[in-house]
Length: 552
Image 1 (cartoon, rainbow, N blue to C red):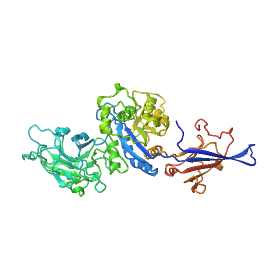
Image 2 (image 1 turned 90 degrees about the horizontal axis):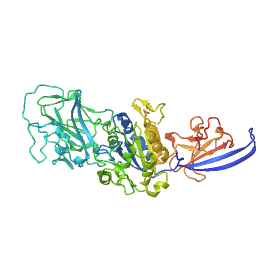
Image 3 (image 1 turned 45 degrees about the horizontal axis):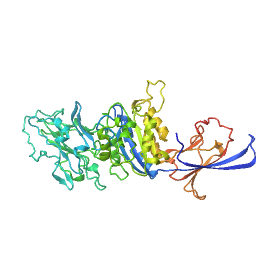
Image 4 (image 1 turned 30 degrees about the vertical axis):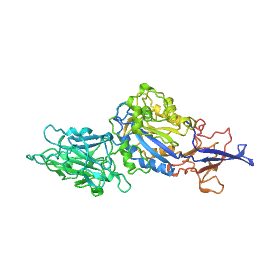
């Protein structure tokens, strides 16, 4: 593993004040460290979307603020995108995820309707997608599963917003809306599969600072039955994580009903964006993902988009290839190293060029974070992948070890038996992520345990690592702890002392590795100097508890 990114200098003073009880003169040392920083970071998060990852996706999604707060404190210009470990499905293979989402209507007896929309359905800002809910003849509610059966709305209901919320939808060719024939109402009952259909939705609002996308989102639901339906048992959710607020799904209130062949509208905000005919407003509980693939500091609703992109659900293949997925994401990059054509599909490079775009920025460091409860099954050796990622930065990538960093939130404990899991938690079991750990060690990345239940410290430490800020600083010699003093300086001028700290010897000095360690909430600021002054033990004296191998 490479050493700290801090700049370390040491001054030596020999104090001839007499011999100590050990027969040597006191040697006073001063170690200087300067916090480094990376001005720009491109962070690609590879999320395991196999069947065991619901809780872990949720934990990462909910701690976005900790990551961004850390980046903000380090004044980092960041951008974030997400891909998955699935290299088999055309939907996920090396693709930056975003825009794809699901709208699931669920009752106690099971799913009532589900729409899985993709960004290639033709999502447009401010334009709803409309499905003509014709309940006659051969109509089936599952027809709304296909993007070919949806069309962009043409009627403007507010400035820059099109759709017909609460009214029956015209056909995609402009045909008049279907009018159902009344029939006998069998009375109030719970909805079953086929009784309700998602008939229109707006997932992408204008997305401006004055009019956030989330406030303009709405869904229209149409009844296909002559019976009155009890909506109090109905939930709206998706297959990943819609947890914007305290609830996992949007639930209709008690007493909510829908008349025979009725149409209703649910929205995020009943008063915003001029949406007509809103029957229910759910500020918390559902969100509709749009086509934002890259999140930057100025992205409106960045946290919500991150949650939706990270929470990819559990439909991915169980053969997790995180390293290969990251490589596929960058195949079309101008500096992409040569690839083994046997492992590349015809549309891989074209997809990167057309959809992923020129994501990597010149002058920015590349960080890849793998979040998975399995080991990597990618086809090539770990060091080959490391060399490949370094090559994305040209010659500088091979000379500057800070330009590319691979990190992992994985199972990090070697199991007693290779057939046993590495760790277990309330989230389930996880298997030793050896290849991700090797990649992190080679590149100086961070390794954290996926079995931790509180991910806030994990994400904070990740932000510090990616921003170049250090929490720990290794001293040049073992100190006598009663003499150790640490100060923080804003510049290297002699009069720049901003703050002086007396290190708590029991907590912030680790004797094993001979380093001083700051808590996450007191990390020395970017480009400041950390100065440690102390009387050193002689070179041939190793304090109790010290580990010379660790301190190298």
